[in-house]
Length: 154
Image (cartoon, rainbow, N blue to C red; front, side, top):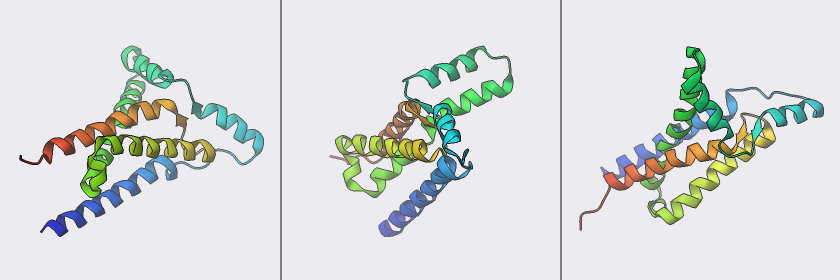
């Protein structure tokens, strides 16, 4: 039974990873074909100022009368965190080393930074420091849920 549960968890993680690859990279087409287009797209699709995007989305959420913009802001703020909750839960479920917080935190941080770097160089998505700021707490929430639900009885 234990082996079936592990196989199910691995398959679930693979499906989750596939959905994330599609969401992060494949659902958009590459925005440019020339160097000039690449430079302008790079300026448009990057943010290295912490909290800039979060503050803009929060302002939209609180002040806009346009329901579409309010929904857009909410989905971006909540969705960026929620998207990584499964990773935070499934990684320690599959790999015992990820149950150690001091190993999990730098690993998931590196994964998020690599995702942002791929988005930076391919322009598939946007490279935004605020994605790291929002994704990391989501992964940590998942890790805490795993830790609380899988505590060993002493």
